[in-house]
Amino acid sequence: MQDNANTIKVSYPEAFITVKEDKRRDWSEIAVYVDPVLPGAGKICASIITHPCKGAKWFVHDRDTGCRGVPFKTKKLALWAAIEAAKDIEAYKHHAK
Picture 1 (cartoon, rainbow, N blue to C red):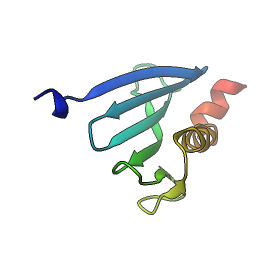
Picture 2 (cartoon, one colour; picture 1 turned 90 degrees about the vertical axis):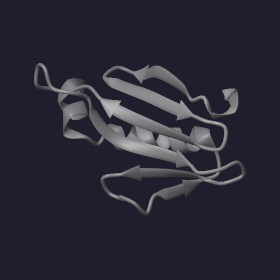
Picture 3 (tube, helix red, strand yellow; picture 1 turned 180 degrees about the vertical axis):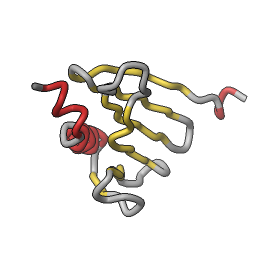
């Protein structure tokens, strides 16, 4: 049963940005959120990184790419692209002022 257990890691790489990684044995998914502007609102999902299986590329899905996703060779590059996509969200721009 331990093989199918998921692990969720939460990190805060920059102010106003939260990264949550759901990692399982065969795949992982990473969501990049921006803090909301309105009080009481939920976090805004700016981009998703999917890694379907071992040996596959990392795919970044954001509001511009949608379900197609943009492939990256490494997790580090995919995370950089996902965070850059989050910085393009209006809520992030509002916080950055």
